[in-house]
Image 1: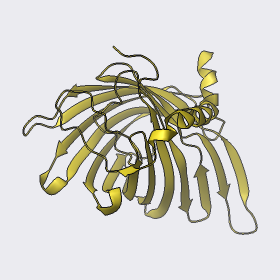
Image 2 (image 1 turned 180 degrees about the vertical axis):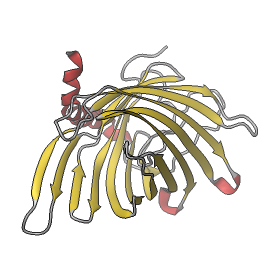
Image 3 (image 1 turned 45 degrees about the vertical axis):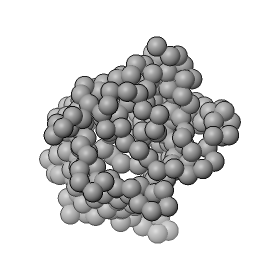
Image 4 (image 1 turned 45 degrees about the horizontal axis):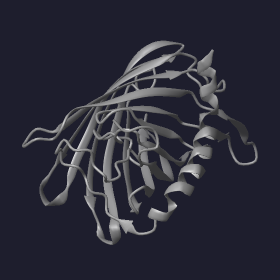
Length: 283
């Protein structure tokens, strides 16, 4: 019964973002490049985010940190368009290596059908809870490793909900490369509900590099199979930019092209991240 309260998470996240922004705004005035902790084992003061890529990093936010990552996403495919806004992710630092994550696809607006005969639907998506545990720091030729088990609960509106409790296990890795490039990737396994349960796998690969003017660019491939119980595969190519604002905020934009069953569609999105260090506890 308490899981039903997850449906209000987008509103809670937005309210929290305004409170957090008011508290960190004095520091968030000068742009700065994102610096990746190469695994010294010390808690990094640099901002580490999981936006805007679909690949989650091996980094956690740190003890006592409260971090909101949110934005919007527009999906366009032939005669259908779906808007996701806001897309919330709240990250809560439990220890130096463990964080609690709450989020989902947020509120959705869908329009389908040919011009002049549109159909409309809207509602909240399912929401989930996840733990990210950083297992290993990067050391020499060995990559950093993390795992992230999660459970999605069916609190969304009919048509936007799977109707079941869907578990996922993610294995994340990250490795610094030559010339300032950095690679990261995930291997995910999910048990999803669609009439009856089926097993879905996903593999991602993301390359990042610092650019002029304090920008960071990324290029990503994301492949899932089967996309639905019917068995087809979906491959997405995604690219974007993000830019740090001071030590505790970031903005980003992304564009992606997706191929599924021979029907291409596009994604366009943007968002922001805001962090409140020491908002919870320190130990």
